[in-house]
Image (tube, rainbow, N blue to C red; front, side, top):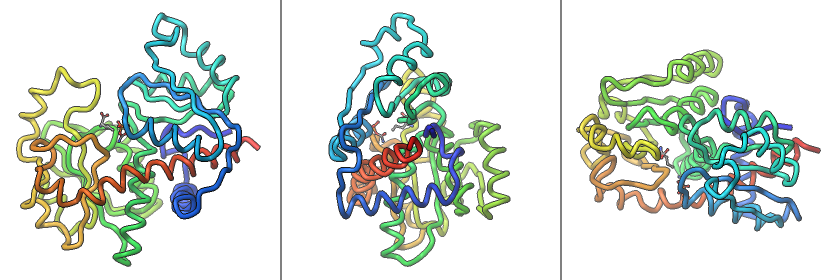
Length: 304
Ligand code: CP
Ligand code: NVA
C-alpha cells in the first residue's frame, strides 16, 4: 500500500503517468471507484482542495466524509495514532490538511488506508499535480518544454516545486527574499535528485533573474495559513517581489502565470497581471479535480 505524503516518494514515471491519467479522466469520466469511501480531515481552511476531493470520489462512484479536525476527539487530545487506527479501518482513503507534517507521518504509520497530503506546512503535492496537468495542456499547444520560475516564499509550494523539478529534470529558477532560506534537508534531496535527472535548479533573490527566459511563472501567497501573526513583517520582507507586467516582460513571450490560489492582489501579484492570466489560473484550479481522481485510482490499484 502506498501513501501520497510528498512527491519525493514517487518516480518520474509515476508522476508523469498520474498526470496522463488525469488528462484521460478529464476527457472521459469513468466510475472507477464504485462504493469506495474517502475521509477528509481538515485542520486548516480550504475551498479548492475540499471541492476537488469531494467531487472526485463522488464522480468516481464513491462517497466522501468531511471531518473538521475541531469536531473530532483529536482536538480534545485523542492521540493521532488512535484516530488513524479508527478512521483508517473504516474507509478506503484518507486525505488530511494539517498544521504539522509530522501529523501526516504519524497518521500514515497507523492507518490501514492510504493517506494523502492535502497540504502541510512542508508540502502541497496534489497542487503540483494540478500545475503539471496545466503545464502539459499548455505545453501541447506550445510544443516546447517548460522552463519554470517560482517567485515568492520558501514555503510548501516552493518546496514541492523544487522536489518536482528535481525528479522530473526540469529547469527551475527560484527567487526568494534575502534572509529567507529553503529547508536544508529538502534542498539537499533536490540537489541529489537533480544530478540523476539532469534538472537545472538555481536560487536567487532577484525576481527578474528568475523570470528571464522562462515559460511558466509560479507564485503563491507571502503569508501562508498559520502565519497570520507574521503578516506585517513578511509584507515588508517581500517588497519588490510582486509579479506584475514589468516582471512578466522578461519572461518568454508566450509565458503563463500559475497561482495555486487564493491570490492576494497588490501583494504577490498585481490585479492587472492576475486578470490577464485568469483563464489559465482558474483552469489550474479546476485541474485539481482530475489529478485527484487519477491519484485516488492509483492508490486504489496499489491496494489490490
Ligand atoms: N490551492 C489550494 O489548495 O486551495 P484551497 O486552500 O482553497 O484548497
Ligand atoms: N502556501 C499556501 C498555499 C495555500 C493553498 C498556504 O500554505 O497557505
